[in-house]
Length: 83
Image 1 (tube, rainbow, N blue to C red):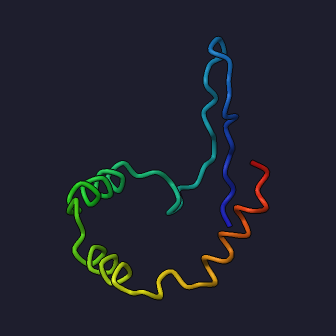
Image 2 (cartoon, one colour):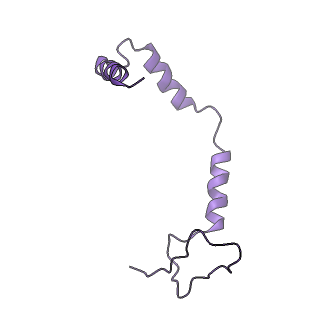
Image 3 (tube, rainbow, N blue to C red):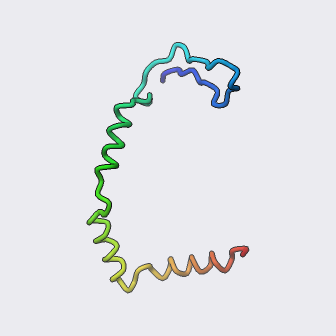
């Protein structure tokens, strides 16, 4: 386990920002390159995912979806809600 120095989240604008000392880099540290790669992956995803659309079409075509147990639970939640 590595020791990490914590920096207070909210600091006054008049106070200089405290820099952590004696920190050890871990895999949890922020890496801007990883962030850029993740954003690229998100932007490269198609707007419509065919596999998700196919699953939705299957569910809509199934007369037993949603299961009666789910409908009953929802009905109880609606009846028992305050307003």
